Length: 564
Image 1 (tube, helix red, strand yellow):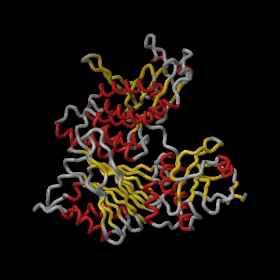
Image 2 (cartoon, helix red, strand yellow):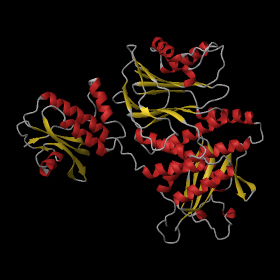
Image 3 (tube, one colour):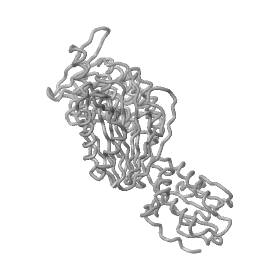
Image 4 (tube, rainbow, N blue to C red):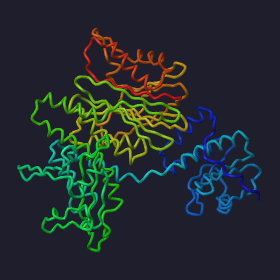
């Protein structure tokens, strides 16, 4: 027997063939579950010239076990797999057998075997080795958490929290949700007024509504509001921050407590959710240790939708006595200012920029960007139907549910389907949402995308050619049970992706002639050599010049991604 060559560091071919790189990205894209990666790997390997079959061994503890195999194969040899893992390479069978250990000496990911009817040619060996490297990268990604319970919980929360804009109703829904999903006996919600340094809330008994005001200098909730940090008290009375004199409800003595800050987009604390007494805690039950890391995870998942619902209800309450139009514009501008901001980011190998210009009536175009890991990032463009306050609060709700689901659902197809179901489930979300979801595979230079009824973005190639990104499915919030398909677009150096709202290309001169997609593409061809942020700003400036003598009827939003 001969020694196995040293395992090489995990990295792709430094100069991969573009078509092969795109194929690898399409097959082993970020977020793919390990079992699916292995299944696709053996299927691809078995399809190569001269290969009769392929097998993948997963490493379970210290022992290998076959997980997937395709084609005509000899009987699985566990001894040979053990030898491979220990660093010993069995003598090859006349060049008909190939075997690789995926991973490194401290972190084994699996074993790939390929078998041929005759000695395998060098071109096939090189091709399989390249596929192995791409699969190795996908398998080395951190495993996504089990997300089905979190996804269902978020959809349930979104449905309940958006049933009303009445602050007392929203608070009641929050208390029901938080106690249901954490097992707390009681809960409370306090909004934080940083200017007055006080906490306040609203309760309703029958038709009577009452406001409660407390100084933030007292109690755990005040400490959490001031510091922006959560607090988990195993023994509430043993903590100096706990205001024992307030805890006087008959028969409801606080034993343990979990307080969680709810934050706005700017990171400032706007409210505090407080949970009291984990069920069975202090009674020798299963939760004698108080609130757990699982409860932290529940509040982390729910905090976005809860914070958005509270803020929308607070704004509605604040301007309840103003005129309808003034209320719409005032609140919509607040939401726009907090939710949208000019963005310019540098991603390894790319530049990303977003810019927008709001119309007097205020629509609801939305852009968001989420780094997933060092190799991939996600971006979303969305256009919520309507204008003014209704559309603006819809945008805030969409942002909250998108961010909550994106943190728990790593598959683009599942994420889009979950967003569709969440939007349909909300009693107040009668507005439809056109969305473009993109996942940038920075490693392979491939943009994965799902277009759910959004105006199709364009990719202007360095050679001047144009690709429209249309694949996906129907608009969100219209039809239950929709499925979505992802598309792929490889981005090479000098290529420019441009996403835009309807208001950008439909801006028209007084005579009715629209700016149009062709004019946008020609403009980007001329300015494609500039940084992404310059291109985004310049597009909006050009549209404004074109339509300056006509009414500004719809928001204009542009997102530019440039491959360096």
